[in-house]
Amino acid sequence: LLQCGFEITEEKMANVFLILQLVAVFTVVSLSLLGSFFIVFANLIEFRSRGVLQTGDLIITCLALSNGLIEVGQVPWFLVYILNLCNNTGEDFYKATDFMSTFFNKASSWFTAWLCLFYCVKIIKVNWRTFLKLKRRISSVVKVLIVVTLVGCLVVVLPIIFYIQLQSNTTSISAQCKNYYITENNIHVYGASLSFFTSFLPLAIMLASSMMIVTFLCKHSRKMSKNTNAVSGSRGDGPAAVAKTITSLTVLYVVCTGTVFALTSLVVLKDNVLVFIALSCSVYSAGCSMILIVRTVKLKVRCRGLCCRDNRTEKPKH
Image (tube, rainbow, N blue to C red; front, side, top):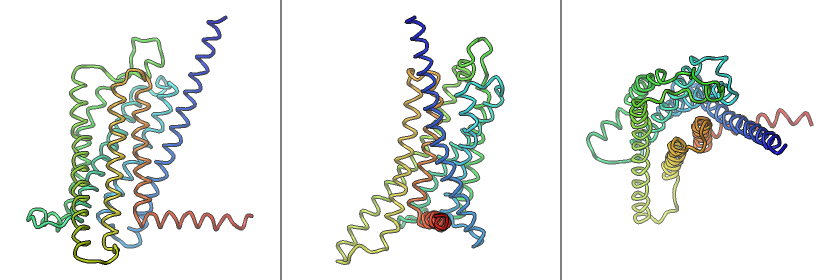
């Protein structure tokens, strides 16, 4: 009887944990999808009205689109993985969703790095010849970087499909659906290379750009305070706001990426480790969208306009 009661309790705990997982996934993914595609559509509307999209907005659009497409690939993956439905979908489903999510996740990392670099080039004022040439040609350089990023991520991420294979020598559906990566020696080499080129290199660019912007603004603020007695003017508000945005994105990236690498080394989570890793990526996508909407003036104005319009349409009902 005690054994039966223990089994019932364990089954209830497993069901509660399953429900909590689904609720957390639904909440984070919904925020990410809403925020990401709001940014994309807002910038597309501006492009349609003006016929041109500024370089910074172009990078933000690519970043938001990548974050949104990550969730498009992860939504069916979450359902199949958590509910153990892999027998109905096969390993080709995992190959497609894992490739799609990983590709856009890595592209998102690089787009964040290019956004930091772009604002660094626009804000910092130095007399270096190479830096001045880069500042004059930054629009063309950014377009080239976007194409190189997409092609490079495609080449680096594509081999991931060769490491995915459902286990046929197990009777456990859970083990078959959750342990689908082949544990060979070269997978560690591939994983290390993938992390270096698509996680650590973008992080290095983010940190360097953020530090350079903050250092320049601090020095500029000291010079202004020494030369003038005026109250802090609006000329410094723009660069300061950009610095806060870049720093927030960098901190969010460090936290989420550090969480992913920490989770990969935890044996306690066992079969649920991929869920938490994917959820961390979704948290980054959602947080990135929220930061961009709150810290970007044009996006904030459009968001306020949308909310106020919805409130005005709801008032006559009362």
